[in-house]
Image (cartoon, rainbow, N blue to C red; front, side, top):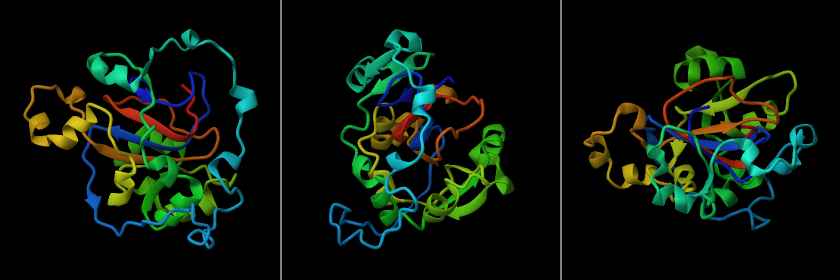
Length: 245
């Protein structure tokens, strides 16, 4: 893997359940009605079906199989805080980093909790495919290999079905404004593009270092993920679950 990664845990991790990926292509944002009430209000969420597992954390995990107590240096990757990442402009280095604290102030930490996520974004259309399909072709080029579904249908009917090896990794989804705003504030250098896109596009950065505020969404069950692949610089930010590195 050759891209900086953000996480909450350390090195040898479980696959992500819900994550967002910022990379090098602009997403088209569609206006959508924002939901203002939250699932802190039991009345607001009384009719939200979360399926067989009430929360992301209630789903089966392989923590005992893959967990360990190795010290940080065993990871063989620098682990730095968001403050250090931005102050040192570490995105200029040609090596991966593990960056902590990126999501501390993100509304997504509440709004992407399973019940609230399904209440806010049930009808968002996403593409899903097998890990092999997505890993070999990428979500932009998979074409007919990606089957279209909604977030609600995937989470309730596909995500934990052992007969279906389907994983959501979609950067062409019709992203509602609210979903994007849930992932603020962006870390640098993504924030630079959001604040001054013309300045970034007019800079002398090479294409592989031209960071933009593209958003992709990934959702999968335990031990799912992409097969080995490579791409230009990106931030992979885990919101719920853990990512094996």
